[in-house]
Image 1 (cartoon, rainbow, N blue to C red):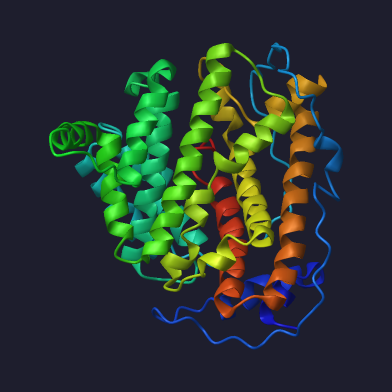
Image 2 (tube, rainbow, N blue to C red):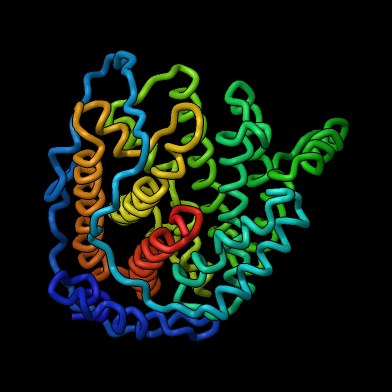
Length: 395
C-alpha cells in the first residue's frame, strides 16, 4: 500500500500527519519519486452523495422555488467537531513573514485601505503556511496568498461591503472586467487604453493583476489557465449570490450547494501543485473522477468557512447565506439542529474525498498522488486557521 493510500485510510487517520509530511517533504522544484502503488480495480463511483449526511441532499423540483422567509439568527451556534485531518505543521515565524509581506502588498495595491491592522490580525499569511506544508519558501506562499486575498477583496469590495462600494446592481459588469484581469482581454488598439485606465483605477483589479503576475513566476501556463478557469467559476458564484440577495430569496439547499462548489476555495486549492513546485497534468486534473473528488474537498473546505463565519455574518445588516441558515430555512429546524446537519454534509464530503482519492492514487501519476495528499493537507490547515483566526473568533 502506498504512502498516500495509507494516509487516506480511515484506520490510519492518526498517522496522517507523519505520512503526508514524509510525502510532501520540500524538495525544491522536483517532483518526488514515490513508490509504485499496487493496481486496484477502480471502485464504481456513485452518481450522487452517499454515506453520512445523505439525507441532507435532496432533489428539488425543476420549477423556480417560491420565495422563503429566511432564518435570521441573532447569534451563531457553536461549531461541533468536524471530520477533518489535523494541520501538518505550524511555523509561526514563516506565517509572520508571509503575513507581513502580504499586508504591505495590500497597502501598495490599495485594497483594504485604512484597515491594515485588521488585515494583519486576520493572519492570512498563517492560512497559507498551514495549507501548503510542502514548501517553506515565503515568496511562493506569498504568491498564493496574494491570489487568495485578491479573490477575497473582490468578494468584499464588489459583493458584501457597501462601505467599500459593493452594489449588486453593478456586480455583473464589474465581475466581467475582473475576469479580464485574470484572463486578459485583448482589445483593438483604439479601445485598449480605456481598459488599461479602468484596470489601474480599481484597487481590486490592480490586486488581481498583481497577484497573477506573481504566481506566474511559479505556475506553468497550463496551471495559470486552470486558475483562470476556477476564478471564472468563482465570479459566477458571486453573481448567483447577488441574485438571491436582490430577490430576497433563500435558495433551496441543493441550489446553495451547487453555488458552493464554484463559490469556494477551489481557486486557492488549485494552486497546491504550483506552490509545491510540480505540476499535475491537465489530463489528470480534469479527469471526471479527479474533478469529482477534488471539487468535493473544496466544497467541504468552504463549508468550514460557512460554519465559522456565521457569528460575523449574523452581526451585519442584510441577507447573508451559509449552509446552516439555508438548511434551517428550508427544513424549519433550529439553528443548532441546522448546524448539526451541516456538519454531516461536510463530513460526508470529506469521507467521500478520502475514499475516492485513495482509489485515484492507486492508478495515478506520482504528481497526482502528491496533489491529492496536498489537498488533504490543505483541508487540515484550513480547519485549523478558521478555528483560530480573530476574523471568526472573538478574543
